[in-house]
Structure formats: C-alpha cells, structure tokens
Amino acid sequence: MDLSNNFFSGSIPSCLSNVSFGNYFSYSWGNLTFSYWNIRHEDGYSDLYPLVRLYDFTSFWDNVQLDQYVVNIDFVTKNSLLSFKGNILNYMSGLDLSCNNLTGAIPQSLGKLFSIRALNLSHNHLTGHIPVSLSNLSQIESLDFSYNNLSGRIPSELVDLNFLAVFSVAHNNLSGRIPDKGQFPTFGINSYKGNPFLNWLPSEKNRTKPVEIPLSSDETEEKWYDIDRTFFISSFVATYGVFLLTFGALLYINPYWRMRWFRFIENFIYSS
Image: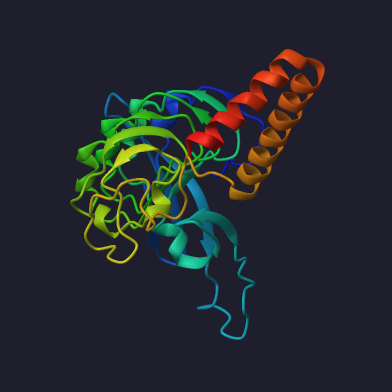
C-alpha cells in the first residue's frame, strides 16, 4: 500500500491494522488456478476474496502460448526505490505513508500488522513516542520514522526484531540511550543523526559495537551546534570595527573624555 507523496493530513487511521498484509494464498484445481486474499475480522471470522483467476489451456493447445501480464511495482524499501514483479510479490508486503502532512501519534494498532515487511512514515509531522507494540512486527525488515517530531526514547523492545535490516529515526527529538542489542549495533550513525539528546551513538570505525561518543567528537558526521567559521570571523571583525569607530567618535566629540583617555595611556606607558 503506497500512499506516499500526497497531501494527506490528520492522524494515521488506526483501522489500517485491519489490512490483511501477507494473508495471500492460492490453490489449483485441474487447469484452473485460484488466488485469494484471506480477510480476517476482529471476531475471528474470515472471508475469502478472489484476487486473480488464471486459466491454463496449454494442455489443450500445446502450440498456443498465452500472454502473461507481468505487473511491475515500484516501492521504497530499505532506503531504496526498487521495482518488484513476479512471484516475489507473494512474499512481500509494505505500508508507505511518507512525504505527507500527517500529524498526531503513531497508532499502537500498527503493531497488529504481523506480516508486514516494510513500514515508512518518514517526512511527516508525527509527534509522540515510538509505540512499543511495533516490537510485534516479527517479519519487519525496514522501519523509517525519519524527519518527524517524535520524542521520548527508542523502545528497547525493538531489539526482538531479528529481520530488521534498515532502521532510521534521523531528524526527530528522541532522547535517551540507543539499544545495543539485536540488529541495532549494525546501524550506522546516519540512522540517528539530528537527535542531539540521543547517547551511545555508533562509531563509524566500528559499526558492530556501539561506543559512547560525545557529540563534539570529530567522529560524528555533523555537529548539531557547529559554527560557520567564515560567518563567525566576518561578524567578529565587523563588530570590532564598529566598536572602534564608535569609541573614536566619542573621543572626538567630547574633549574631556579625550584628555582622560590620553592621560590613561600616558600613565600606562610610564608604569610599564
């Protein structure tokens, strides 16, 4: 389900947890192949909805080749835009709500999407904490919450996501300690940058073992409080010049202050 790059606003609907990601199956009967989605309701009752019916007449006409319609699906997963087609579509599922104007908190109910493999909520205006219920996404391979306004800590329960290959919470307001177990030691510093109150950032030299690095260390890619050296020097020179001109103008206008200043300099020279 790709709803990215739109103008959706408001909160993420909790009813998205009812989407039957991954509940796809097919069976054959004779020369007929049926494909269905298995839609499960909260009360446990299931409905079967036909998806595709493919008739195979090759057993009747060996010389007749049926046209096969191959669907290409472009989907962003693991930080890459890839094109998928063929049987792999039976084994992948993802939800992409990135690049919208969504607000509010991430619903706890998204933790019910047990079969989902990619979840992208980046580039929105989401607030609140990262739900602990996302630790139930046992098949998840890619989680992207970057460029939002999320706060709080990264739940330590997410270390149970054994298939997680890509994780990004960059440019949020997260704080606390980064988990150092499970897949988390393999994630680079780019996954966490833009969160000045996170500690135990991973080292660029050794990504397999997180080490505690001060934010002012040279090993970090970008300091959140870094100063533009050119701007600093130019502003300092300009301020110093304005001060000297103002001081000189005051001495020129007021002869009493001018005499006091000359005597102060003369006494300072003699005393030195």
